[in-house]
Structures are given as C-alpha cells and as structure tokens.
Amino acid sequence: MTEFQWPWEYTFPPFFTLQPHEETRQQQLKVWTDLFLKYLKHTNKFSLSINEQSLPLFHNESIQRRLSPELILVILEELQRTGHAAALDKRRQEWQVYWYTLEEYGNMVYDWIQETGQTNSICTLYEIASGENSTQMDFHGVDESVLLSALRLLEEKGRCELIEMDGSHGVKFF
Image 1 (spheres, helix red, strand yellow):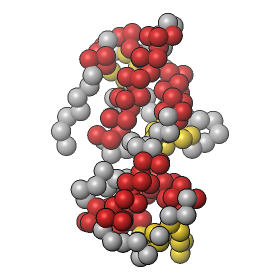
Image 2 (tube, one colour):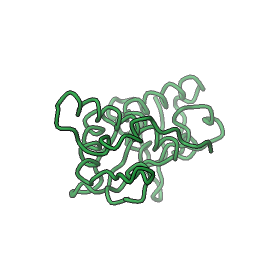
Image 3 (cartoon, rainbow, N blue to C red):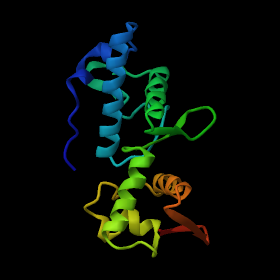
Image 4 (tube, rainbow, N blue to C red):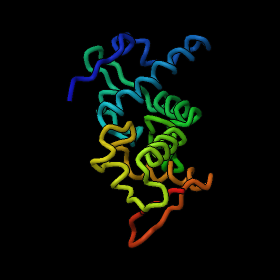
C-alpha cells in the first residue's frame, strides 16, 4: 500500500479546531469530509468510532493537534447529510462511512450485473464484493454490510430481491 498523502491543511493547526466564521467553517468541513472519505478508502475502512483517538485521521502528532470528539461528530454528521455515513448506535459514537453513497454503490453493482449478463441469476454478497469477476470495479472490496444496505435500496426500487439463508445473503437481480 502506498503512503497516504495528507492535504496541506492537515499540517495547519487551526484546521483541528472548528472555525467560528460560517464561510470558513463550511470550507473546513468540506476539506475534512473529503479527507475522511479518501483516508478511509486508502485504509479500506468502513467504520469509525469517535473514540479512536490514536487514528492518524484524528491526530496529527507532528503538530500535536487532535480533533475533539465534538468536531469528529460534526464531520460525521456532515457526511451523513450527504449520504456518506450512518450512525450505528443511538449515542452516535460508532459510525459506518461509505466511500460512495449507498445509491451510487447500488447503481454501480446493478450496472455491472447488467453488463456481465447476470440478471435473473443469484449472486452471493461475497461474489459481488470480493469475487474475482469484480476486481476492476470501484465497489470491489466494499464491506458486506455496506453492500447489503445498498442492495436494500435496489430492492425497494424493484431491481433485485435479497435472499437470506442460514445467516448469509444472496441476491437475485431483475
């Protein structure tokens, strides 16, 4: 894995404090949300805990700055607003983060299914997320719980049917 390239803002101490000026704060949140998505994709991570204080994303040791749990929550709430995150608990401490929105994941999978002639056949979530036929796709390697959420959206649109057997899931596309 190549080394992650941090943006210049990551070395700027005020970046780690929520800015009071509205326009500046919006720009700061934009950079942070982009950084969260890029970092998590680079590290192949789909979940975060606000309490993961040792995570380099939350803590820049070289300038001795750390994101506060409150600012982490503000960033995650912004990601949720744009469809890139969802809280996993009522206290909003554990989060699932999506590199793409669930709708984008669903559309990518559905387009791939159509392009590869797999409509009206049953696939396992493993085949879609980790199978050798999907290695070149942007959704390859997606966490199966994220994939399942995306497929539920497709099911609501009548494009597939989820099948559960013995605790594992399959899906039939239409």
